[in-house]
Image (tube, rainbow, N blue to C red; front, side):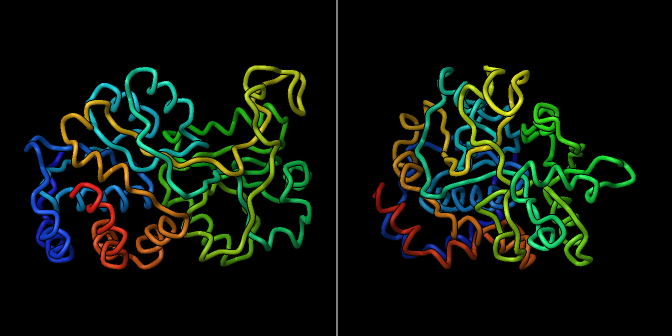
Length: 318
């Protein structure tokens, strides 16, 4: 853990009118612990949340966490708030933690999708690649020395909880899922392939900066239903579960420790108001992954560009 002090002056300057209106709302000097994960928009927006809370008098700490284990830690009160919980990769862990005392702190306006993705130029040589069967028919064109004769799917970091090897097996696809170590490697792989117009299929998600930089499309798999995961007779493979994709219009939620509202009631009012759109989240990621800002710099710039939004959050508590 580390106390976040270094941005205090910059945030105070950016939010001086808001702080003057809200005064000091903090009920306790005990730190509010905000979860940070290893993807860009979450790092930027968790910092935005922390900056806002600091601007009205709260002490904030950030703690990095695995995207699956974080919810149990929130339920136990070891961490207090998570700004980005994604349905496609975190639904099971999120819902399990609700039964243990974690609180659903609200759903963002943003609609999410986490899925296999291809650049548009792939369709020139594999026109059916936006459907999983069409993509699988062209698997050999995605082969590498590591995977041939099967195609390579570039998967997300393993700690994101997405085991695409299981889906590949269930759908009997001619692919090998290779997980990268960090999100930045996904974009490096994509940029390299894009520059050379080489075939690539990789994990992507929306909202994300990718949609403003690269032209491409998600691959459509069978729309998931509960039966996909516990009834082998459901789906394309009658002998396997998990033969489906991720939700096409998934939720994005906030998560909180059950004691947060009682310990810091004004902070709880602010956190309930925080609500991001697809465009706001994509812009937060773009500032880092395209413009080259640090997450801290991007958070400050995001707040400056969205002063009215931030003012509305604080007004809820003041």
